[in-house]
Length: 180
Image (cartoon, one colour):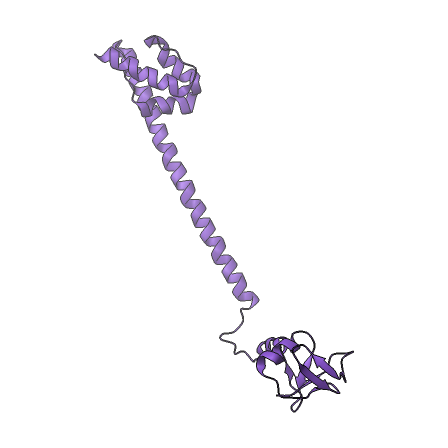
């Protein structure tokens, strides 16, 4: 195909462009192949000399972007967006409720362990015998009363410690020795 230069400043160009491609009054003297057209069209604007259609890489991109696209489905309306937002809010509320239920269940287990420890202490006080606590009961005491609550249990056993975990471990060891 022959091409015509339409870039401002090059309209009517006469001479040799690039690899021996000659132009007279802005029109190529010989037919050019697609590679030559794309090279020239990548630098300056050219059109097909016969049809006037833009040529070159930019023209290919522009024509590809002008293709008509079919709409697969209707666009969502504001009502649909509100329904989606409402559904997301409901899912978030359900997730938060499940988390709260799990926390409540864990708190109930901890409260039950603390109550079991208190009942053991009361029974032991009535019988004047030693009280044996489980790890879960000691951790429940620590969670509820802190390190001072553990020290109340540890003092009669002769146990001392600086941290809750250290006190729990030492109390369990002292109880094991006492039980033997």
